[in-house]
Length: 276
Image (cartoon, rainbow, N blue to C red):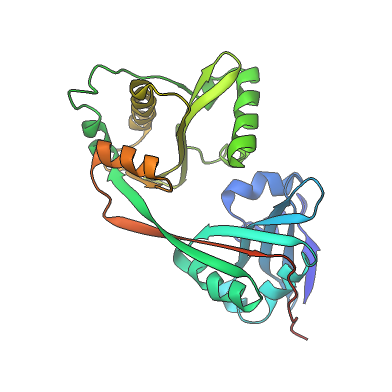
């Protein structure tokens, strides 16, 4: 088995293994990524980011094609990051659930937490925000495409510094996200992603002030933008990771019936046995 650095020149060979939100940054070199080759065939990918000293690593994606799993490909990829502190966090859905025992087997301390999962349709959300106490609130905020150059810079810095999110991860598949900006500061956003038509995920809802009506107005703006390009039965999901978020959701839309498992893990120094 061999490993290769993934660049703009060879990224097409690994396009089906790299999450869409990382493609642009991997292709232009802003995010490091390597591919695993098994029998002369691209078999897996690992994408990560590091701190300024290049000592701490945050895994962003680890994927191996189903036909090459349990052959040592993932271990080989992970071994390239040895001697550095590594952490990761992901939602346990689809084949990602299989990663938990793998990380434990190579020495990570893992933690599994179940969070409430908000799940509603666009039409239901709109009707909920038409209640009497919200009907006169109006809309507030601006889409990313409506911002000026300096405001876009502020948004990019704010997301990176406060939430370790890159606005460029959303540029290719973003549903209408909305930002609240006052002069030279961002103080609120509803950050949305759409990787599958008819299914929108709200990655982040944040508001720094105490004016609940303005928060509702931002959500109204978000939903009105969605309505312009999406059908009423469009599904909306959001992971509620804080008590404030859960309280806000339930106050607007009712109790959550589903939950989502989030797996996180750390290891100060990873040492893995490679397949020989």
